[in-house]
Image 1 (cartoon, one colour):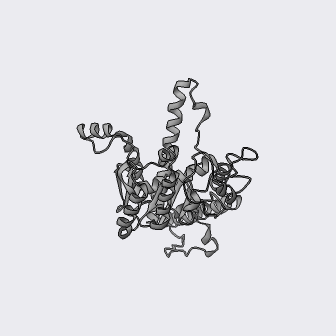
Image 2: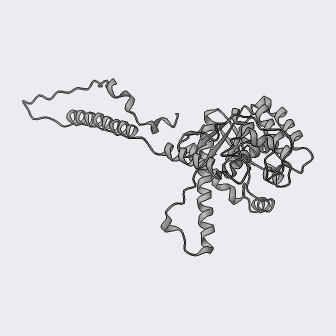
Image 3: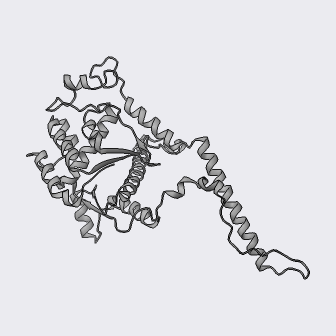
Length: 331
């Protein structure tokens, strides 16, 4: 999932520029424009992002967790539903990470493209629902973060029709450029916004590197399935060559997966620090409990029991051993 962050005062100019970039096209959708050969329109939209967006961010769940392989149905007719369930879970995880990031940037209004069709919206209104059922998972994830105090209660999640919203056209272009790089090893479109964009691993929030090259892509229209000669020259000849020979399809995806797995695998040192942190916390709690019990239980006559009610200062020796996961939620 992708988002563009636009300052409130900059929004009118950004929407005007996005509308001009879309041209005479009926709405805007990067994938449809690409297959129709209107690559220049996508590039113009990405240039709007680079010029008008304060920042853009992509939250990626890579790879999509297949879940328990034993739970994958044997019946081919049911496999599709199983995979869609995994995709939906990945979407919600990506969206939660995105909302956490936006909250850290003090974003208050988040406009999210609805997945409901016009017919589903009409049905929702007729049945007295505020949203189509397909959008309710997004609201559940949003409320879950509110309950966890992971995002501010001032943040609003607003579903809108993306086809007619210039702000969402910009986010669509960002998502398409990242997806194009990941699926087909063509980073030249992502490079247009690489200086104002971040890719986050959805589970941990770790920043991922999509492409080390900072070369700007060429301008102008290109055939949808072939890079221009200049684009081939400016891209890596091994990974991004348009030639069938030596082209390593999936190199960027492989790199992202490796980075994601590394981010989700804690190092031995980190595990040791977390265990020591837990031990320190348990020791402190046992000590406090012992003092409390000694203060409550009456002692036999003639026995003196020290009643230390003064708080014990925490040892600075273990100050840095608090598990990192407890710092994720800011009260």
